[in-house]
Length: 281
Ligand SMILES: Cc1ncc(COP(=O)(O)O)c(C=O)c1O
Image 1 (cartoon, rainbow, N blue to C red):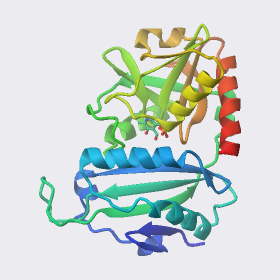
Image 2 (cartoon, protein in one colour):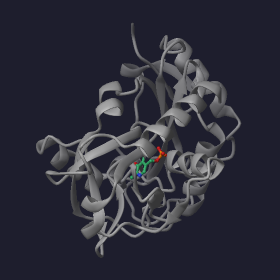
Image 3 (cartoon, rainbow, N blue to C red):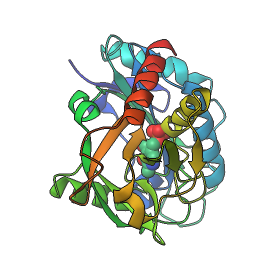
Image 4 (cartoon, helix red, strand yellow):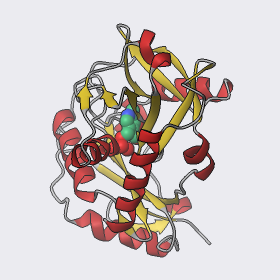
């Protein structure tokens, strides 16, 4: 079956979807994106994703008017790609548009809007047994709150993780764990959850927000404070959370086991509640 994508108002086969080499996404990474997960045809936290998209666009000053269109476009993409009966993802990318290469914003430029659907299954084995991660210095810019398509540091450190047989890299800035290359980082110590507060140093993750809601509803205390790098290995439990990672236990950091190297009870509790919500919402 031919993959069907959305580009600037049309649904068309991916090999017929052409974007100009002068697109500012290509030349400057001048754009933002979102990834939404669909569980059996239903989006999880759609409005949170839409609101974060609006914020990213506002912060980089890309003007887009019609946000109402997206829900219908995404459903069409899932249908046309026969992905409504399974776990699927939607990737949406909006760039400032196409123009002869100049750094400042060109006048009269139309944003390029691109979306595609893809199979996006839960990684059962990782959810069950946990994963290994590594740490590295956070060399990214100071606006990590914008979901920018400029992801080269994230790519380099996802690759470094892969080369070390690890699932993720946790970034460390000034001795504090910020987030990972494509997920937020959460630790548990003495029954209390610790995670970096939303700020310019991390993406305000929607999965992290859901985890915090679960904790508050169930009397688990949350302290929004980044974990010191020197204390990561001494946490009782660690997890990476995100639209793709969902709630993945971390059982090994830089070759050292977390507790006994098995996912802990708080992580299990949060996983159970989280997957209940993905079935309901
Ligand atoms: C750098 C980074 N942090 C955190 C997250 C998790 O965010 P969310 O839960 O909204 O997917 C992602 C997800 O893609 C990410 O790329």
